[in-house]
Length: 149
Image (cartoon, rainbow, N blue to C red; front, side, top):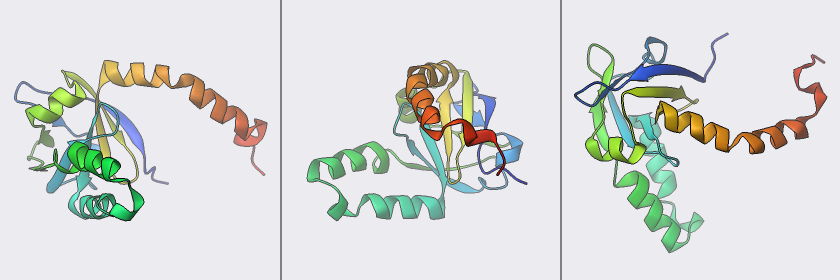
């Protein structure tokens, strides 16, 4: 079984490149799109995922004019096309590094359709801040969560 999600430690080098862990490179290679994430992180998507994401965001019927403006400003207008080098590194533009507060130690989080690049201390602080929400959600699932039927 192959997991569609995962997390790994990584580093940002002096030239602003983050090393993408080997186990994620089969899905994320060649030309990619990087932009601001919802929280203080960077999102990396393949071109087809980006095109779907952008089309969905631009569906103005779903959003108020203010929501659409903010989504365009935060995600579409900050996007850059990047390419992974032979060493598995992706360059991260200064504007994205600054937004995500990326320093040397990073976490690379793989969801089903994108990578999220976080500054490691920021990521752990974010998770700690959301711990109560996670606890409440798990409690709703009850005690049968880990029992086989």
